[in-house]
Length: 582
Image (cartoon, rainbow, N blue to C red; front, side):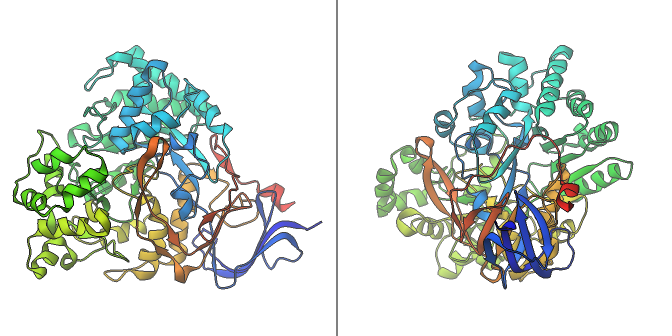
């Protein structure tokens, strides 16, 4: 009988704490790491990790797999990038609690906010729940390649309590707020890891209405936060336009001090945010200096829209001639797009924008050639100005829109244009250098499973290794040890998941074995593999030799083994250190 289930031999171990790397072995038994260093004895399976990095599995705290997790055991694309734990239910959107007559409404909310095809959600979900605890029970039925945890989402809670009264600007009564608070308390006691809300005009339902929570008062949000305080654990997560009149940091600080719980928010350079990022960080630190625990979630690169003819958006979406063919089957669109006369007609037209409070965003999509970049092979996600469509078109002696049109037509109309809408105001990522060194920020905002027609930032952990640690040319890099700590230990600790994110005896055997020199993001592609043929952008990576979840090899050389050791996470977790030591 082998002494261990698995031994990883002679790897370069970055243990997740930020400590210097060292060479050694890792032994696994019953899903736990039981020995690290020079391990004697045999195992049912051994992996030779000579010349490879051995690191904990990544913990991604900002995803939107709320629907996909009910039907997909693989949990791609996050699982393709070394992620072994995902936390979903962010930004106030999700599917529980769900009154039977509000299913379509909740789907429309998710489709509008997170760009997940409503037809896929409608076909994929069984809706064998109504309450939030019942949703957790449903999630627990399906084994997966990763662990999943979730928030109680504000949108679903408001819809459940207010019913048909839930409209933009709806003001809940004191009794409504009491009921919402009770639902959140019930959800957290059942195992939710926190509560989430959204307060940004960018987030709209498929019908164009701002999401529930956008106009919520501080009193409503604090009372809901107190529900978690009564339980004694939970994270309050929020996306916000940070309007100064809302005094977001004031009430977040008060809530955190009163409950002793962390509050976390999406910290971005954004045209929608009234407060510049520097002011957001300063206000957060002012509150933390007074005893609050507010944590900024930061993205690792420009939050970029990947534009394409068959994507959700592209620069010609507002040209009248394109609008005529926009709803045609792709094969018929392609015939038109290839027609020189149609091309000339489109290029000769002015954009016609809808009346909207985000018209500046539409202008950026249709006219922002200085900040749009062709996604060539081995694309650099920190592109320089000379790589812009504006300057490449000028060098080629053509107009920017003609240049963009022709690039979109490459590969039979499958070309991609990258537009960093957020986090690229300076034309570089220098502003993230200090934030990645800070203890009051966590790497986040991958939106795994969401924005299916516009982004694929679920690849963020791979980007961290490739760009920030190894390949960055335009500014400072960071150490491998620190990058790994940021993606597993720090994110896990924010959510009280103290049983993972570290390679040491007693911790979960969630491990990546990485050929660091080969780490590389591959070119994105568009798939139509969601239920009902729904589309999504996908991106794979090279360099992950093995991903191990709970001691089981889930991915080998980037391919899923079919193993599904992942579970539902219910509440905070601790490492079983004493048992492992024995």
